[in-house]
Length: 118
Length: 115
Image (tube, rainbow over all chains, first blue to last red):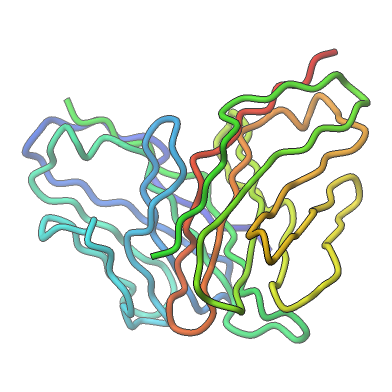
């Protein structure tokens, strides 16, 4: 169990450019989540997948944001035409739908991708 | 919508002492899940402890325990025998049962451990 991994760890881009982040969940986990965290704040939910199906999207996820999980394994988050307000840490988490004796569906987080938009 | 409030932006504790971080939440649901996560300066979010609302017994994980007061909608974290490695930002989080899987986080408490 290598944990949730995210790449790249840091991304600096110019306003108007497109960026793509990747998340690899814990191997047996079928649920995957994206959150955004700005400095000094708690993470805010963006979207959630169960296997390859995107089941929930936050109002924070504008039309410029798109997420995919094509084979129910890794996921990508793309931001088109980046704006300075997109600068944040983007966190990925994963969970296993059913664990014997545990209903909490606990989410385990990756290290995040820090995006800076100049 | 559920909200989570952490009213202590910063706390400090002497090494080996005990500290309690507070968390309150607002919900109309009777069954839900509560979590404390720790985020050290490296920024990887780590699960500290979790609680199912229907369970009366307070969760405990080694030096970490919670005081879950369902009627008061309070979920505080107690850290005993504080260690330098406990220094981090601590987030309280809420999750509804059923279809809504996202976590709702509080704004965090920055814990400093003094040697």
